[in-house]
Length: 127
Ligand SMILES: [Zn+2]
Image 1 (tube, helix red, strand yellow):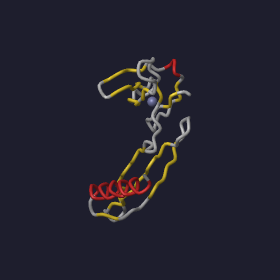
Image 2: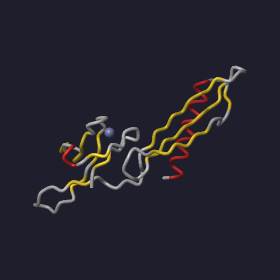
Image 3: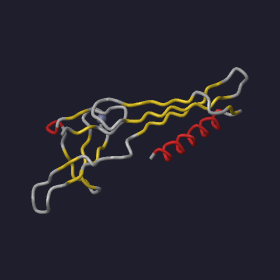
Image 4: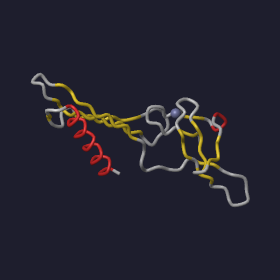
């Protein structure tokens, strides 16, 4: 089983020989040679035997949330949201969901804040 980078924008598939595992205070991990993201590893070897590292199965796959405010003609701002979700398969696959207009706000920051809170709700609901 190769390792797969958990960075949603990278998702590199790495042969075991390509990555160097590190033992840090928080446990085992490797750093992706492509994007340098920290990826957690778990030692499933029996006590006393050589370490056997696997990538922990994750139900919470990484998400990337992009909240933006789009200026409207009347000077107000539409809250927009894009959520990229990594799929639990190897390769550089991610699905993207987008909402173009979640509400209209007088202030760009309010629009972004609204889009972010929508993202939080959404990800909690699906988790
Ligand atoms: Zn990576």
